[in-house]
Image (spheres, rainbow, N blue to C red):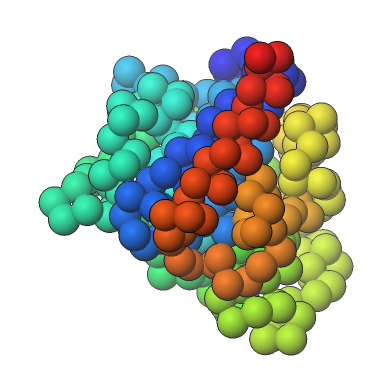
Length: 281
């Protein structure tokens, strides 16, 4: 694990947000809202939780992370870049023709990506398969997967949850980004997945609920996940879609679109001011 204190994590999360906004703006397309809502989790996973080696992305005994909500690749890419898997400067190549950083994660082209994702519901299934393989191989690695709360409207998600509980995959941790919004609006109105916690518990998961933007709560929940035996763990994190950019926060319209020049300047000014404050400048 990479040792990082809370202040450093907050600074890194702000840099991840800057990377998200810059990359999506450069691409003139992408998904900023759900990337920003998970910035703290991306940061904590890659800088403190995951047992990984940027110099050896295919290390056999590494922990695995699967971005089941693959459209939030800008958040994953920003975390990977700042962790040293590839140059931060490359983030502005997101979605460009011929770029290795496409709109959804591609394990064949992006160092550090453990599974190609994008079709919602499939990532958690792949993660459960990885965790099951780890059990069969008697390996100590852990598997983590991040889902959107709109994504859990997919039936395949619950099939994967049923499998994970049946095989007692205590090396699997699923994380649900509960920001309450999907592309068509409020998840409760589109197709309510609530009560999320009760459903996960009924499927045989140990469940923790946290504030997605509080590093202490993230750390506590992931530490608990290590102690749970005989069942998988789920972390349901209440988040703000578009967190960190005032006009994007809690606005479903920013699920999947890029900023214009004026919006980009406002977003970057806000994030740079937040970063300067954290750095004490």
